[in-house]
Image 1 (tube, protein in one colour):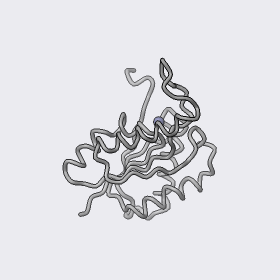
Image 2: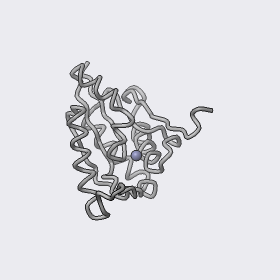
Image 3: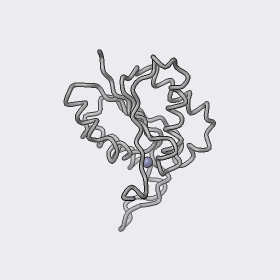
Image 4: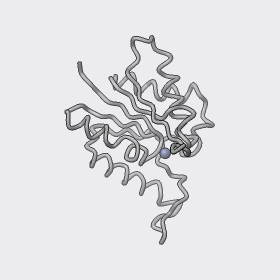
Length: 158
Ligand SMILES: [Zn+2]
């Protein structure tokens, strides 16, 4: 069985805080990992203190951070989808699903990791998870890869 992990998340750093362990373990076992990153997180508002970026420089900075992070984690294939940060919830549902479906069909993953729709805390997280699930529903049940969905809660202690 040719295993291949496909991580589908909207922001640079989602992969690092959410799936770095799984990515590292997969790579140690020689399994290729593709990361489809939806946006460049270019609408982020935290520019640091003292500030190290502004609205114009942030996209390039986050792109470089993303590339560096992927190198650290030994991600084999990084795809930047060029979607617009903080607007994914307003994209057409079928269009976003098309974007995800195209990548899924190309990569033919045995495992997908995305956000759990409705439990991603950020609207872009939910929209990405929903689009992936929508794309998978288009396939026959037996053709769907195993899919892990990350849920984040603000009240996990409770
Ligand atoms: Zn995020």
